Image 1 (tube, rainbow, N blue to C red):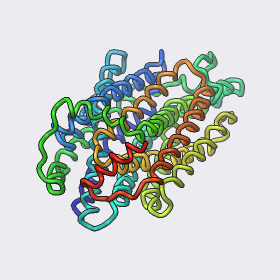
Image 2 (image 1 turned 90 degrees about the horizontal axis):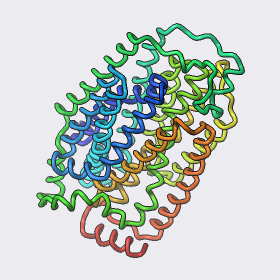
Image 3 (image 1 turned 120 degrees about the vertical axis):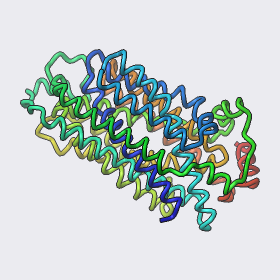
Image 4 (image 1 turned 45 degrees about the vertical axis):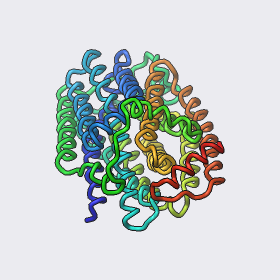
Length: 457
């Protein structure tokens, strides 16, 4: 097997194990810890920590520890969050959420930087176009990574499936589910019935073990990226401390980045809505918590399959077509969710919505990362740190207003942000279409043309 592909697979399966645990936990937070909004507050705090760390930590940690060291250290924060759920309270979930959030931005920045460098290096050796190889590697990664949702949610469904089934809710109580949910309904719903503590501990034990295995896999099998960088670029003098620290903000001199901030912001908002509002106000409210895992499996499966599909077809269709597909799909889902009244007799509909949401989310996950890697090749670490910063802000907002806004209002907000995102992205594509094709291998030509583009804008 090609060494580059081997490293891509090691990263992919490491993230698979880690997010089998975290993804399942995130989807259950709003349902397991609904008292006083502890679950969504913990998630909001988590992404608040991620937002802060996005400003400073990724370039510093990647520079000091390398991509491999940054990934290992950051993964330990995810394991700590799983352990904190064993003793769920304001004094355990909030501190471990902050710890996870501080590690999340460096983790994803290191992963994106690693795949981009490996892809560019392999393209140079094989005589291929860099953007095609990078797209393919991100497609492979997200195929494996998104399947973590399948396994994580399957585990939670099988464990919580041992909970006694709830009786069907009367029609008047179902009126407080779906878009009408305002977290102020006094009627009893399925979301008020929690599984036994023994089942919760069983699930947390499985998730914690999965996280530990992820750390061990990366530590044992992943090749440090410094070796790849030295082979392709030669030895470089380390930049000054403050230059590395502020590199995240310096990149805003590029007008393209300023226009693209809505892409990760919307990505965070829509993911936050699915994992908190859809799972609680639609699935748990009408069906019960034991169905959350099964419904989210459908989301993860379609997301994974579409991720690898988009990585293949993007070289033929171009990214614009895929972005249009994602926007239209999400737009249709939001309008339908505003009108739909969920009920236990409409089981298939819950899966249709989660599946379509996965089709659209796969566009944002694969194409956003590839877009940032191609447009900001000379400043990859800072670009991906900015990406995670704005995506984290989207999560913070989504979970932050979860406890005091009705689901209907949240859907209107998503519709507005999606519309603005499409317009801003279209402007970037117009700017790029007017510029000459830049060389695919890093060098002085790239730097000169990047400076020329920024000057024109």
